[in-house]
Length: 197
Image 1 (tube, helix red, strand yellow):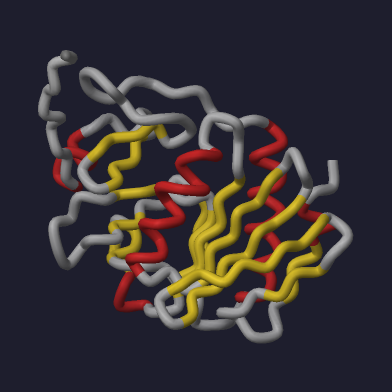
Image 2: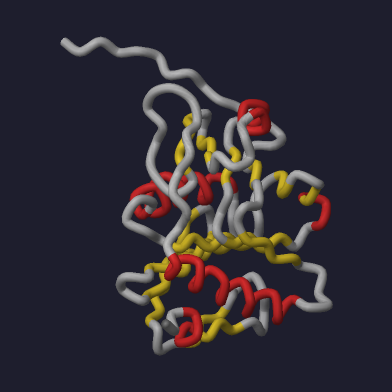
């Protein structure tokens, strides 16, 4: 019978103590590479940077959102930008979404966002897809993220998850579509430009 060892639970205080070049997220006290899987043994280690394609897609999505939000009260942030989903509770979750949109200025401080952003977008990669589709999906749902985008460079599709009555309702879009941003009325994202390469 295999031995079960208790894993150490990490907090936002641990996150702050790590080298800022060591891209680590904490989800429910468990550390994960920002661009990879759970850290099983030991502390944080350096993780490879995201791919060029990932950066181009994330950058274009950020550009379109930032252009729309110019002069508006909502703000858009790209990674690395810390989001503390449990800031008012156990404070055991500190994540760095690819894109975060925050409309409540009282959720912002010098270290990032305290609580759920209005919109989060994650650009999938082979090393993060499971975490983004399952672990973060459920965490964002419980935290009350109103809109969650899963952007898939391989299939050139976007799944938009909208929070209604405690559940996510999912719509799908392709690189030929223009996708509405529900939390930003009037904002339309041209996915042809997002996936242009």
